[in-house]
Each structure stands twice: as structure tokens, then as C-alpha cells.
Length: 367
Image 1 (tube, helix red, strand yellow):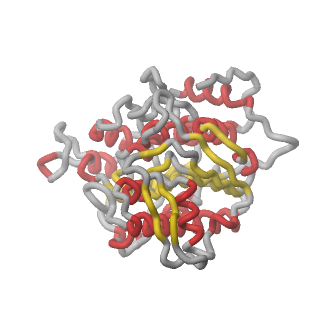
Image 2: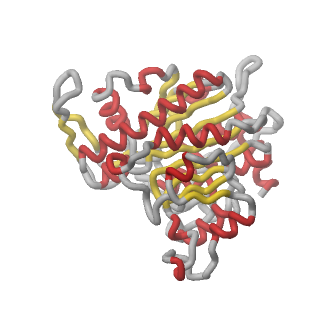
């Protein structure tokens, strides 16, 4: 895997920086699952203080996968996490099914801390793309095993059932208790938000539900508070950190064509983005990149008042669409994310930022 990381970093060296650039010490990747441009518009229109207005760098991402016009979260997440276009259903592998390194693999090699915060099952496609490698996104037990051995410092989300055996109410048929294994490796394991909130641990798995977390309106904690907690734990590493935060259930609102569900999840994610943005604003050494894996629902804002009240949303689909999604960036080297990007190019630029210009030979491949 280390050899593949070096080869991938060499590939990305055609992404050059002007002058003598200041590279980010920390990278925060924010992914609104299913959050197209219309969803961002909905968030901004209904929130006059929206953090999206503060980002100095904006752009678009083309979300097609290697084999389909409409990507799924597996291929979309892998493009961002690994800098490689792959087939739908594939997690952390190329279109031939071979494992490829993620930005987290490179971060660990460079002694950075890593963290994942999601509102879905942690074995779901987007977080799995950063932490595991399989051609089949449905292999949740395998993905959980790979996550448990990934040496990721902080994990917050749902999906506890895939880490414990059937005898304890879980889904694992191999009888392995991955949470007990993690404790033996020095991790704290938290079952509730209160346990996490009362701890000062910097190395933990916080799995609050068997499946996805509760919807935003049904939780007594927010994605923003989870993001803040992760930032507190990761910030102690003098080498820096890479954090991925996903507003996972924006996608659910699109699939269900449920306007209020969609708005609630967009607001929950926007507050988390604001938390990351404010951290970067104060820290000065942090890049924040906000984007999406794809658009869901074919969302259109078709009515409402100019102040954002009485908004009416129509949906063209209950599935994903191939509409471009937004890109928002702030912090050191944020300008390289402007314009229209292929989704995998976003991942390649992230790799380049961590490669620290140690590689000079270009062997860039195309999709």
C-alpha cells in the first residue's frame, strides 16, 4: 500500500502551485451527500447568515463515475477520497477492482491524525471510501473490519451492528467483537453522545446507533457539536490532521422527496460547515473544502417569498441525477479548487497538498 501511495503522489505532481505557496497543515473535507447546487441555494435562501456566502473560492464538480452518467456515493466518495474515477458500487478501488490509497492512507504515512464524522452508518459508502477497499459497497461486515484496522484516530457515526457479533445483537456472523478489539488497541468506545461529550479522549470510536444516526430534528446533539468535538481531539497533533465530515441524510431527504426533511438536514450540515469555517478562520493553517458526491432528487425551488419564507420545492426524481455540484474552499491553497473540476481531480488536488512537493516526475493518468 505504501508503494501505491508514493506512485499516486507522483501522478498528482502535475498540479503545480505558483510562487512559494503556504500549504495547509490541516484539511477538513465537508461532503453534503446528495447536495446539489439547488440544495445549497435552498440553504442560502432560507438562511440570511449562511456560511456559504463567506467562502472566497467557489466552483463546480462533475460527478459522473467511470461507468455511469449518474454516480452513486461509493464511486463519488472514492473519487474525492482517492483521486480516482471508479465504477458505481466500488469503495477505495479502481475500475479494475484493485485497491488504491485514500487521502487518509497518505495522512497516516505523514503522521497526521485522521477523523470521520457522519450522520449515517459508518460503513456506508462515503465514509467507507476513505477507510476501506472493496469492489462491493454492500459488504458491510468486511468494511467494518477494515475500518477497525485503519488506525483512524476518531470515528463518530452509526453502524454499531456491523462491529459486534450476532450473540450481542449485532450483524457479524464471524463472532468477532471489533469494539473489544479496538479497546485492546487503546481506543475508547462510546455508545452515547453524553459519554463522548464528557470525555477528553483523542482516540475513539463513537457509534451511537445500530444503523444511521437519528434525523437532525430528532437528535439532541447536532452535526456541528460532533464536528467541534472531533476538531478538539485532532488538533493536538503537531503534524496536523485530515477530517472528513458528511451531512449524510441530505441524500435521504432527496430520495424521499421530503422538503422538510431535506431542509432540516441542510441546516444541520450548514452549521457544521460554519464550525469548520470558524476553526479555519482562527487557525490560519487549515483548508476547508465543501462539496458533494452527487445530487439527489432533481431539486428545484419553484415558489416562496423573497425573504425565504413559504418556500416550495419540487422534485424531478427520487434518485440521483448527473447535475454538477458546488465546490466551496477556504484557507491555504483554496484557489486551486475554483472552476469546473472532474470529481476525481478534487481528490488529486488534496493528495498534492499533502505530498509536500516531494515528487517531481509526472505520470498523470486520465479517467
